[in-house]
Length: 164
Image (cartoon, rainbow, N blue to C red; front, side):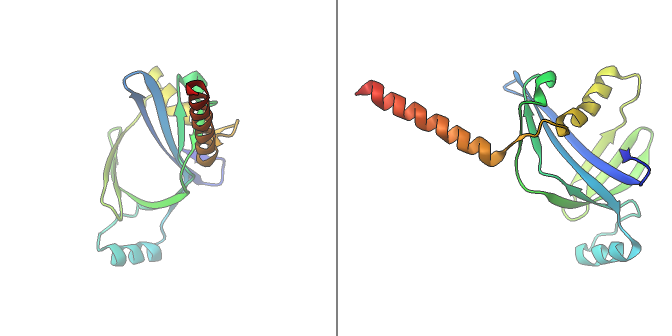
């Protein structure tokens, strides 16, 4: 996605699943992508031993967001977990509504399909990330962990008090 007129490219990965086939979960990685210069491209090729295309970009990702529950509630039930990361991604082929991608250092391969305007559900799912990365801010993983430990401690204390 391109933002504004500055030419900044926002790279977004969204994985949607259902935990135990019941609880919807969305994982969002959003970051800023910058195409590599010729000098940086040559440096990466010499370090990795892999030939890369001119479509190679460095993406600086924010910490992943993990959201739970139905889509209309996910913007409130989310956690920001983990560190910021940066990756090098190559796109060796684009065409026919398909984009092939590859992680430059790992060699991981990706296939992305285009979501067309007449695909209503696909468009809604593709745009979900925007709602998730806007306010209200998510709970940090550390805060969630502390809260979980506090709840467990209260339950243990209650169990001990009831058994005495």
